[in-house]
Amino acid sequence: MCMQDLTRSGPPSPQEPLSIAAMFGRIAHRYDLLNRLLSLGFDRSWRERAAELAALRPGDWALDVCTGTADLALALAPRVGPTGRVIGVDLSLPMLTVGQRKAAGRSDGRQVALHLGDALRLPYRDGTFNAAASSFAGRNVADLGRFFSEMARVVRAGGRVVFLELGEPSRWGLRHLYRWYFHRLAPLIGGLISGEREDYRYLPQSVEAFASPEAIARLMEDADLRDVRYVPLMRGIAGVWVGKAG
Ligand SMILES: C[S@@+](CC[C@H](N)C(=O)[O-])C[C@H]1O[C@@H](n2cnc3c(N)ncnc32)[C@H](O)[C@@H]1O
Image 1 (cartoon, rainbow, N blue to C red):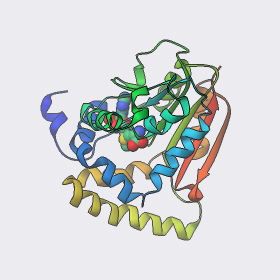
Image 2 (cartoon, rainbow, N blue to C red):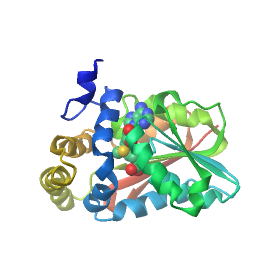
Image 3 (tube, rainbow, N blue to C red):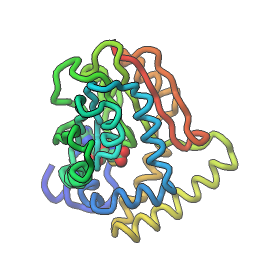
Image 4 (tube, protein in one colour):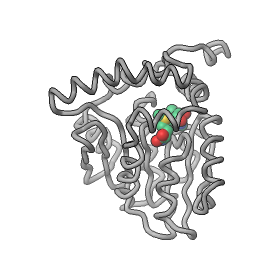
């Protein structure tokens, strides 16, 4: 792929990981602010719930896959304590740079290390971590089956794989209101604040095109994860899937 492709504007296709990384590079400076605004501040509590479901203990090692600006990594850090370690991995250097700045400003940020790397070829040995988690990234990866296999591979037997993603509310009325907000208002707000309206059109499209909760659970089971369960958050606007490795 030539450089021109990487820097063009417009919504990327999930089959183009470098184009995805370029898109997040463009919006990195406003990513956190827009997450807070567009989720009405709920994204933080959803990540906290995911971090809780990772069932980590002091001294554990945890991996945040597609860490972006490291919000989930920073939610995991207090759970592993000063003797533990959290590694966040992502393809986008500008997103990691924002995350690094945030980690440097927090006392428990010392436990967090951020690496440049591909979720579909994680640069870690089998069984390195006590848990692996990921938030709001599954819609962006080209091969979700491989994404889960890689997470399962790097987690020790019995450790948890946790996946947090946006969804669509199960109730008809709420779903319509949500679609209006997500398709009309969110791209407008996202475009005004980031200057990249097309990239914020991609957000609702990617949620709508994403797999159902049952299909995600099946993919996790196919990746040899066991006891997979789905925990809906706010009537399905978001959800957490949890499985055990080994
Ligand atoms: C929507 S952001 C989510 C960031 C963060 N996890 C959060 O909770 O805000 C998706 C992130 O996935 C990263 N990403 C997409 N495909 C990737 C891949 N194959 N390997 C590593 N990172 C990837 C992007 O660079 C971006 O930072």
